[in-house]
Length: 388
Image (cartoon, rainbow, N blue to C red; front, side):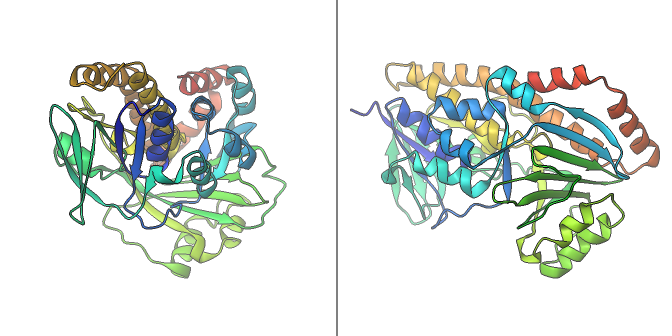
């Protein structure tokens, strides 16, 4: 017997994980997604130790681990290829109890879908707002239809409609840089063995690369540009990236060359300042709708999964979904999650700014600071970040 109906606005990673977590607790949770077909947007995603643990808790980890390539070491390099720092991501994961893996977003999305019954995901449903009252909440759709439940979770991303109504309209803040992502279908190089994640820092530019399944190599190029700079598609986009990375150390340019132009994605990167609350009477926010974060720490999708797990725990511990019990559950959920996500959002913004220094003096100081920081400090930072 269902403990109550929960409406989830959004069928991305956070929305699907929320439906899984809440159904595990006995709720009839349904995710409503505006897309008519679930297509993974993006190339790949790092699922770090803390997110893997959350996936295990909600019973959706096995397929992700089978599909993922584990990361043993994470390394920073200078533009000329000198190693600045390295930390043992694999050892850190083993000490905590779960690995860090990199998977294609489609594989993570499919693993989450496979953990849900077909009726738990409704496609082609574009949410435009909601009405809440003492007894429940009604989710409103673009086509004029409505859905009624005891609770609404806004997991509808950076420009969340649910957040806009709950907290008021506000534009996200531009990071100052764009990200271009690609996957080389078959690429090997002695400098990039499997299990090594590499990040190269330059002047106003950075470049990361990670192996994923089937011999593919995933990469992300980031470039500091004004928000007014517009995209150029196809081969012109690929040439634009190559012009900015051609003089980086090997195999950066070779990897870009090996990637089909139509497989290179471009996104302006935004986040939002931490919000003082995520919740109303019968509405709460999750993932990018609550705390969008620049992707430099690899924690965005993972934090949404952890949100879903924690929200499920807090709601599951209440006997019924009254306004009083929901207020208690939301307060406990936010107490556990907002301090963590706020810290990660602000840390990611600081690191992103550091990655995109353009002053030669600041770039030199950044590289020296990374090189001179003791390995034990890096390990402690990662252990703190990966705990939840």
